[in-house]
Length: 91
Image 1: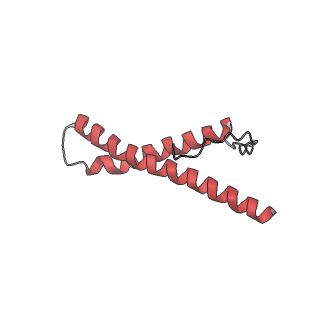
Image 2 (image 1 turned 180 degrees about the vertical axis):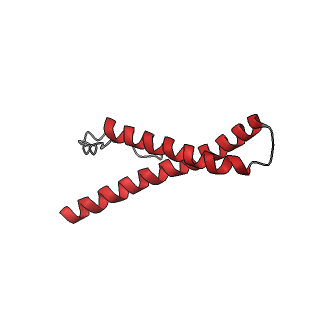
Image 3 (image 1 turned 45 degrees about the vertical axis):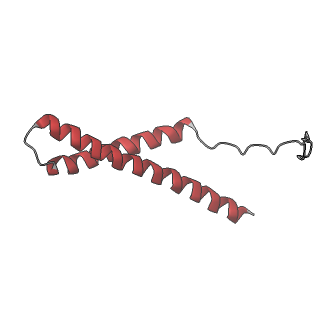
């Protein structure tokens, strides 16, 4: 009873910004992340303290996957910042 009546606004929403993801950029990202995963696996697998090859494969892969996820995030953040800087220069 003490709340104001709900108002309806039919304002036009702003247009969504254009997405810059292309199949080529996805392919490049995939190749970079897979190459980084293989590189990191080759480094961390020798540091797993076991002689069992399946445990070395498991823990080396898990560690390399975690680092590859962080690498993927870094690639995405770099692209966003680079695109924003290029847009700021054009203005």
